[in-house]
Amino acid sequence: MIAIGCDHAAITLKKAIMAHLDEQGIAYINLGKSPARLLSWFGYGLLALYIALLAGNLFYGCLFRFDGQGNYGEGPLRHLIFSPLVVLNVLMAVFAFVKARGSRGRTRRRNTVVFLFCLTM
Image (cartoon, rainbow, N blue to C red; front, side, top):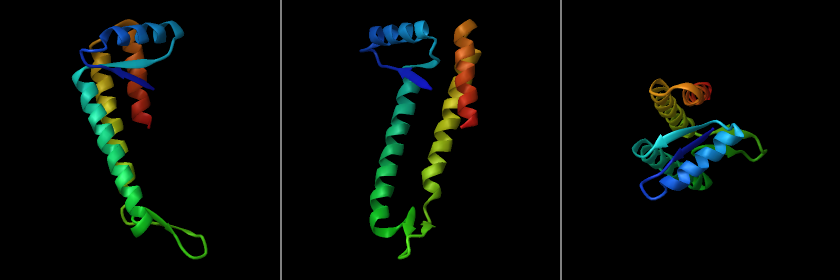
């Protein structure tokens, strides 16, 4: 899945990229401006959380650990890795559904495919 969004500075480039993707028959979702920022900041926050958890895992084994014999063991905060991904997919699915409802033709089909993809993830 490709999600495309921009602020006021790159609208011409965004349109050129969308035209190229249309020519190639590649599905994408046009996020516009403000929802793209919201999803981008959520993604940045998710990346920062993952980096912090993985750095902490080196010292405390909060996500996973290996015992002396090399056996894998789950850490107590392992669920923190998966919960934000579920939230991100749900947000993207809702956004794609709203975009699909407000569009027609090929764009509607494209947004519906993205919506279904997010639901299955």
